Amino acid sequence: MSTTATIASGAIFAATYALIFTEKVHRTVAALAGAVGMIIVGQALGFFSWEEAISAIDFNTIALLLGMMIIVGLVGQTGFFEYLAMLAARTTRGRPWALFAALSVLAGLVSSMLDNVTTMVMIAPITFSVAEILEIDPTPTILGEIIFSNFGGTATLIGDPPNILIGSAAGFSFMDFLVYLAPIVVAVSGLCLFLLRFVFRREFAHTPKNIEALANLEPGKAITDRRRFRAMLGVLSSVVVLYFVHDYLGLKPGLVALVGATLALLALRPKMSEALAAVEWEVLLFFAGLFIVIRGIEVSGLLEWLMTPVRGVVSGGEFFAALVMLWIGAILSSFGGSVPVTMALIPIGQALIRLGNFGPSIWWGLALGVGLGANGTLIGGAANVVGASLLARSHGSITFRDWLRKCSPVAIISWVLASLFLWVFMAIGLIR
Image 1 (cartoon, rainbow, N blue to C red):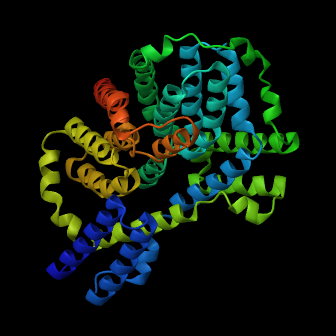
Image 2 (image 1 turned 135 degrees about the vertical axis):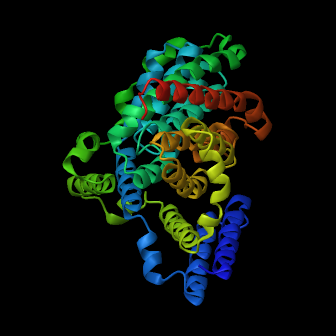
Image 3 (image 1 turned 90 degrees about the horizontal axis):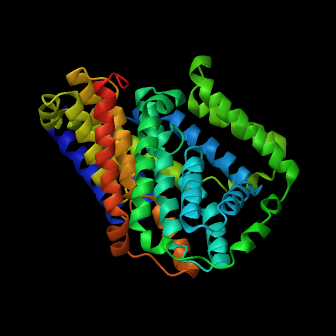
């Protein structure tokens, strides 16, 4: 490939990512501009065609996102998440630490199956209501929910978009994530839960008021339509079962999500405008644009030119390479770009595996890095931004400095713990 093609594709790639990270324009606009620029320049210089651009878009990823967005939107309308949050709050009997742990773990569990933003939008209002009843500050619990929603999203194939990208690129199944990645995430999050108890020890020392009022909470009233609730619970259960066995049936995860969305639409017969309102079209276009940009730098020869430092990483061995992917992914993702960071690092991971003849530990390192990296700063993940925004509307605010003081140390410790567990699991052969 010519030097001109390499330089041109590199300039488009750099400009696209600069616009995304600086937020000078909406990230979807930046991705689409980069894609259009890559196609036009690629055709002019003869290294990238329209057909190659279309084939670069990973339909499995797009289908998985689209299907789960429809399912999540329809499940959310039944009051299911509010029901779970109210039930968890009532069982804590007003004890601050128990309330924090119950709602944080619930956020993690829900986020392992559904997207983090939906989790925060559904659980945070219940947290505020309970905090008002008990006359306590909701801030620690909201922060715990944000942190654990990012933990939960890291644990499964469908929990977070970066995992969807990694799973599609590596050919991993839903069970692969549960077997190899989820145990590390559970161990890390469990240790961090007790660390957070120390971080917020002063807040948990206050005795709440009106404890008896929690007993009057009626979770059942959160279910607005029991017929729709039962139907969506059946659909969601079916989708989860299919995810467990999709690899044995030869079904792609994206197809499973579309099957679930179709079943939900047939069962509920909602207005299409209502069903599609939950689809974040800008996210799908963002993914499509970045797929094209990344493929452009691959076919132009730029990635091959950048392989020199990658070969240096290979010489350090497989664990060192996995560790590099984990920490680079975590640090870069801390500044709000887990999806673009993942897309940029996937070709690097493929090169590491090819050049070093390494196993899938490279992918698990990347997944841990970009997933846990979201807790690094206030803007590290969508759940962080949404949670802070909800908190600021009526219950004070959390500043960037507050996050750095309270949450960033926990995030860094989680990266260290993930590195240790990854090493142990590789050493004893649990990750091959």
